[in-house]
Image (cartoon, rainbow over all chains, first blue to last red; front, side, top):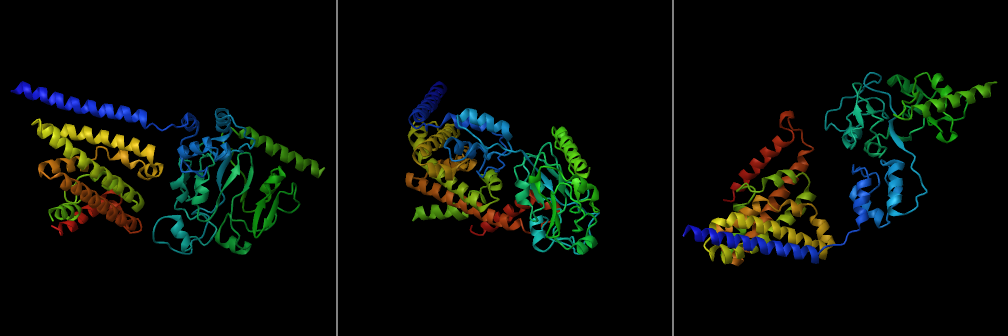
Length: 291
Length: 187
């Protein structure tokens, strides 16, 4: 009797399994959807971070869009020119627009130590909600410090330091711009890798007011403008603005800035030489102008 | 009449999640947004209904016919798994929209215990074919209901001031417990 049950079990389960396998095999053949093999290959080339900088839901969606020619290759900012090159080779299309690699920089120097707090915020600990009621710092252009930018970064490239300011890890930053979108006060910006000098303040407040509430804010004194060497700095609406199109870094303005908000930036790894060359070139231009 | 009773019982009184504690993994995992909870619930209802039909047939015409009902676990699992596979292929071929809507959730629930639970309950309670299908639909709607209620609460919870040690999974568990208690009221 036992033997019969084993046989029946084997036969019924085996038969069931076989029938199902056959069904799946046939279904796989009959119902297979032809997918462009290039989609998979393009996906392999892409960074795979699903950061959304291209405007698609993820790297998979971007790869599909590329193959269907709904997007251009240069949409992938984090990948850089290397990825663009590989993708153009794969898809056999020309891409004339080259990506200038970008990196995020935080244009606020007012951490906990430098700024005055005139309010107390108790509530949801995100910048976006604190921003609605004005945050804690007196300066309404300052970093709120809850780290919304760190939350959204897919590459762990931005973190809060002890002073309550976000710091960008330039080695990891791909310039996807997620933190720029996350910042409720728009103090994070994407800059070209090779831009040397930046204004590390976003305050449009009047100079006298800024001076009272922040030790390292732009007080619109216009010293950076005066006797301007390269014509690259202008104070617009109480804030020094650098015209990056001039192609010469305003190195002299860095020294003249009394609150030190115009600074030579830390170079991204691998770009140190480019930075030095650019600073030297700018200094040389200033010397020539003087003589 | 009995069919209506089975349906209401599966949706409310014997809710799969809140009374039998089946399919808890997606209940906790996919319930942080209402949108994904609805998609998941839809996919589960779909698979539950299909599984109810196919496992009834397997039970009646193979297991009972050959008197090998002790094999129900094995057979139900392989049937459900390959059924979901097949349905996924079929949908992918025929309706891109539906395929995208179900998305990741369809393969995710292939071996969900709620589905095996449904098949086993159906066999245990000796439902007729129609009754079993209604039981499947009811269980699916009950599952969706629980998931949507849970995700609604969790969306509100994001804004609430939860004590530090209870943040995250802990408060979710407490809420699941309270919700289960509330559903006990239907019994």
